[in-house]
Image (cartoon, rainbow, N blue to C red; front, side, top):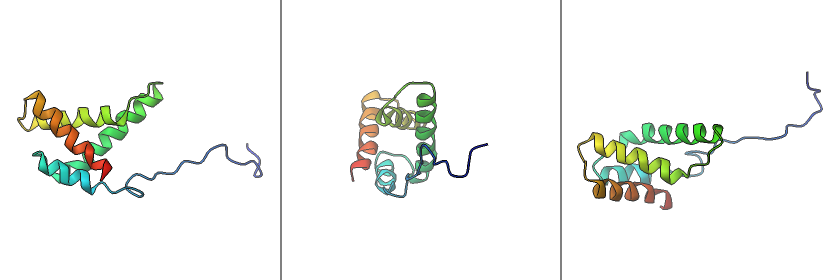
Length: 98
């Protein structure tokens, strides 16, 4: 058992949706034909896949994971054109810069 005087080696803070607003991403989702309500599920999938990749020892850029899931969502709504999916993913991810 650890002594009560031992200091932690690391502290983890969850700042998602605290230090940044995801509203610009929700707005962008609507602009590309998705629903703003899909943002929460999309973000959860991005975090899940990013954490899973890191646990497996792989570093996958957030943009790559986020883009994949936006394209998948667009495909599920009937947008099968790859160029439109790429453009839609770029527009949604640009919301992080707003």
